[in-house]
Image (cartoon, rainbow, N blue to C red; front, side, top):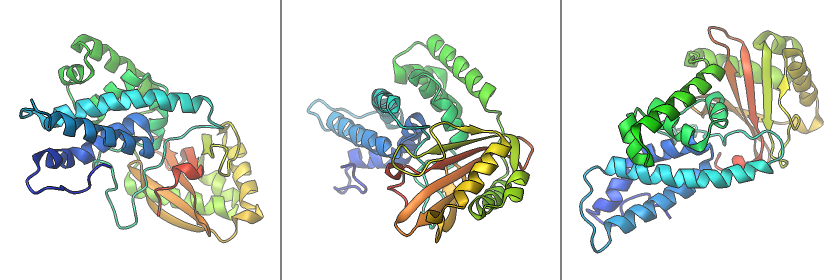
Length: 303
């Protein structure tokens, strides 16, 4: 189990790992989009780091941050292959596991300011594992191409190529825009109130004409369908129909933070039922993307 506090006074090995754990979590989560897999990778990183520094021939590490990131990235790349295999048989759309902050935690588990939005994480799923690793390290965490080359065991020229392809791909599908936090939160609250209240008129006002709804139930949770739903009229009509279901009575909604932005966590009597996040159009208060995660396996960390 990854330690949560130094288990020996003055244990430099443990302290170095814990000093960088938040950074490592953010890097790996942005590469994998899965909290559970990220925790597993950090366990592997800790074991590799501990074994390396406590070995008979172990010497001091000049750059613990770089060494730990190198171990974490390569462990995450190995885990990525397993995630890809699971996605091949996944029922319906696959969305990143929401990293929801507790009500008393304004930062959450990720490195402050370094959490990608759900919309960007969805786009990153279309990159190759190496392209995604390079994009995350360079665009999100500011690692230089020579540093990334050393981490991945590639040449700087190869890394620059990967970075260029990844950046073009992401920017073509996701404009570099993020709504003001206050506006984003207000629109999220308006949308959730309209959706759960079955208010067609309010939904049509807040949804952009080109809006897309993704519902990730994984064959285990409530889902709107096995494919994304496109278009304002279709999305609004579907949400109104869902809101009329008798099973949706007695729900409790809490507004929290996830993936670097606001989200709504919907609770039933049995626990968390869904995490809902929205994406706004550039320079607009209209919603272009709705992401609803209802797979109970992806909601286990929410309290």
